[in-house]
Length: 342
Image (cartoon, rainbow, N blue to C red; front, top):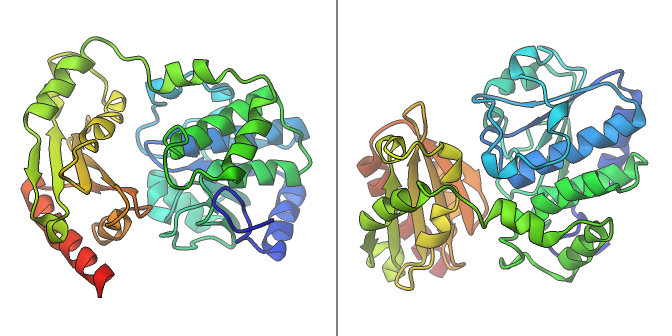
């Protein structure tokens, strides 16, 4: 294997052997992905859950905090394999985490991870804190789904249509439908292997990107109407930001999980290197999405604010005032941009 994005070359043979042995020897396996799961987190976990079912290995699969599958992911195979976090074993023997850069990203299941005998961490975030006992972490991989596909293969389960569909959703969402810089020949080769199982990419695209209730339009309009451009931020590279409140959504009965695509519209702004969207969830916390076009590391800024992610796509949770967070982001983004030039 090479070390190009989309591969899993950063993981040592010893780590792979230990991870596979742990699965083979475990009586039961507990799976968990990060809170508010995206396509990569949930898709990777469901793919491996189906692999365990094929092996006849007992397992539990869940995610912490609000146990709600995002509407755009409710077509994924294997959702029937999920267990409510209240029923998750308190002291797992072997626990496998997916797409979580830190233990805290597991939410309420972080306590279970602390008590687990063995924690296998599958991830591709450069900000991963290596909180487990075995680490299948490759920051060069385009998605955690690439690591999960290798893990499925190493435990001896062939790709089925349903396993491949879950992995494909993880790959296509984390590469921005193959638009981001992590899209390489290796990524397309993986996509080709997955599509060969009979996946219809146009059906996936419709579910993930091309549908929304009418109420999404006025909510998007409100968010764009209050967008602010600050061209002096990040050493003059510019920042654009906006908010989506609970009140915006309540007026149109729009679920929180349909807000993910707002950042994709805001980030188009030519005059801004960085785009930020503050989304108020049903509990009143702000889930913050950030994007960069490549010249500013938004991942570093989000780590400083208790979150994490990639240099070009990251996020954090805010319990406080938006204006205070915006001021802190102005400072961090400018510091990071200046540091990158020195």
